Image (cartoon, rainbow, N blue to C red):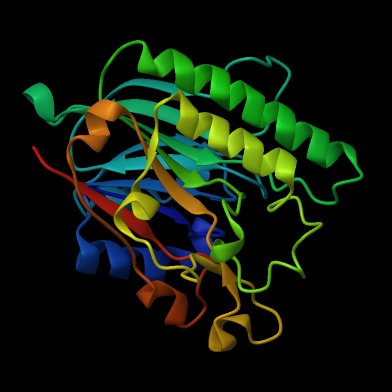
Length: 261
């Protein structure tokens, strides 16, 4: 099973690129973030024509997450538990019914950015991460394959950033953010790309400004976290830089992993 995560930065603006990549890469499951559309405006028909089922948790103009799957999607839930007043569409979870022991519980995550750090946006980010830690820990109790993929808006280490000094005060690299990300891993989750790759300065996001893509001035903030049962099936993981080099691209590029059956 090939599972990918991709912050598309507006599914409407990026639909031609997304369709082309889906046809070429042929992922079985895709976790999308930053849709920037409501549920009814998601291009469901275009995606279904490619053979995917869709679970969408959208929001007008901002946020929005989705799961696309070539397998049936069961037990779909939207919204991260722990705060009934949180109206931001940043979490959707479903069981991917691939048959028998091949199934996987997958979640698409669009973690808050948190900047500027001296505002309530950073407080919201940290609180959201605390809720994610609680929920992720609860999922482990079921002892089933879990893939928590998405735009985490966290640079795990300085080697995942082109210029750590310039980013030292950014919410994505702050110690508080990194500590919570490590807490997720310490629960028992495996960060798929890092466990198979030792190299540094490999990125999944490049800003639109300042020629960041051309200079390879990026950060690695898109991650696939696997429960022990999913990590046991991990066969491959990589970052597909191709979509970032297309016309009118998202500023993120897909990260994918393969789980053996």
